[in-house]
Image (cartoon, rainbow, N blue to C red; front, side, top):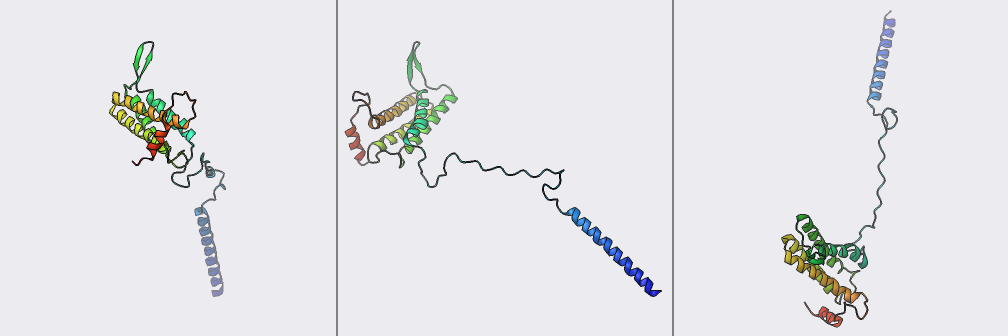
Amino acid sequence: MRLSHRLVGVAMISAIAGLSGAALSGAALAQSPTPPGSDPAVPPAPRPAPPIASPIPPILAPGRVLLGVKDVMRHIVNPAAEAFWARSGEVDDEKGAKDRTPVDDENWKVSLDSAAQLVEAGNLLQMEGRARDPNGPWMKYAIQLTNAGLSAMSAAQAKNHDKTFEAGSAIYDSCFACHGRYIPRPKDSLYKHDIDKDLQDAKKPK
């Protein structure tokens, strides 16, 4: 009789232990995260977008030249100079002289932005890889362009009519002189000037 009670007690303990183990296992399964994509009710996480290809090669060293002289002139110097000249000086039309100096903040800002581009353009033209002859007048003309741009910036910031006209003339003079030296022209071209004097001036100590 005592033996049968003991057997019954052991059987009950085993049953309780089995139920507890099953309950714990079920709780553990309930708490474990569902692997992504295994539950049809939960959409899978989006895949990361592929990297966008760079339009230009990465710059590997400071001061690397990415644009040639013609591209700097075509896309930076010419548009900036034309934008500044369009807002300075006078033009004659059928109605007479027309003053093009800005009269509103929007156009003064265009003048200022254009002048700033010319300041840096002169610096770009001095970089190794663009300078045609570092020991010749090329550097002088590039510095003239930068200085003219600085004058133009000051004039635009001050909204000064006369200084804006003078700066536009200085920009023109620097462009005219450089083109006359480095762009082949006919002998009767208006770009003729004393190249020998430019070469001598470039060699003088500053």
